Length: 306
Image (tube, helix red, strand yellow):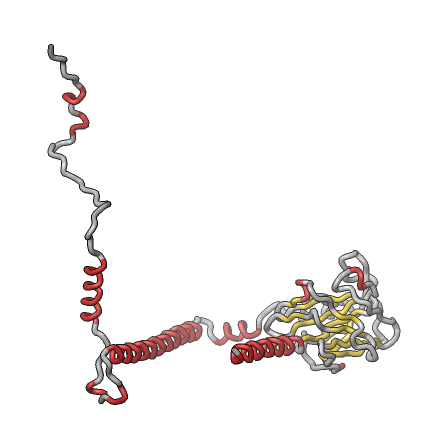
């Protein structure tokens, strides 16, 4: 019983550690201090916002983190529990509104920014450890955002990885979307240039398929060997033979196909007996060699005899 309890505790600790590691991949991705004509919240208001990005390739639950703009009170806004929307899909974004109205919902915080001054933002894990932080420059104008050059990249608190987004063409503000809008895939284009006829792709696909088949054949071979060994051991045990005390040449081999077939037929004959035939349906062959359905003689009645 103690072993099962210890195993359960280890699994719980491993799950908690995996979840904590997932939250460590959370990043502050883009911030707007003065929103005068851009993204609106679910109440139709223009409010300052903070965009978080899940840089991990797995979903992450953020309902236990803290968001703060006060380094002396790092647990200023705890993200509430019980909201299914706090589970961020892999490589996706979520917006928190810095409107000072936490009663409006999960994503409305008690945080407000001061325009014209530097604004510090930090996100902390449930145990109080720092996940990410950044200081927004005081020079940020209304309608401009401070964003990472590439989603989730650049480390923690590194201003070199950030830039001011003015909202102009090629420098757009991107709330709840990727900071770099990629229209093409460079890897696909490079592969298309180097393999115009598709021979390389065909060879790679064939190698993958054959490798998988080879791996499966090896697995099946190993499984068959294990099954044969278990069969020999069981057969030796049924005959009272200790395999360790018998030479390999004298050890009983596993049952052949003929032996298995003979055993199956014997069991069938033994179990499929008919001592009591209570439900046997007997069908007698009709004596007439023709079908009488259209014979007129069966439509005539006999005349009564006096």
